[in-house]
Amino acid sequence: MVSTNVNGIYTLQNVNAGLQTITATKSGYVTNTVPVEVIAGQTVTAEDIVLSNLPPEPTCGDGAINVAGEECDTTASG
Image (spheres, one colour):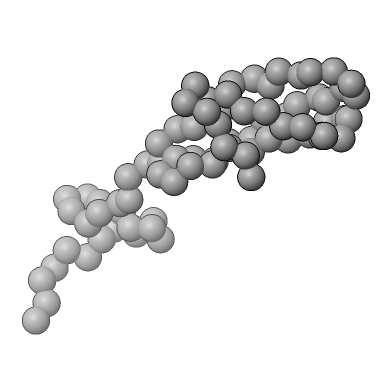
């Protein structure tokens, strides 16, 4: 695991040459993966990795749909 600095910059060392992937994760965000072509003996700059906010969890209410894709049961019981 590698962490970024305050500007989002990171450095990976001793990476094998060839097509590699970089995966960025952060709690509350959608994971994103980008391909990087690593060339032996050279410094390579990867494209920016953008993370999007996770969508809000569905809640039951007027016309809400649950995780199974069905309408929520909003009738009171008890």
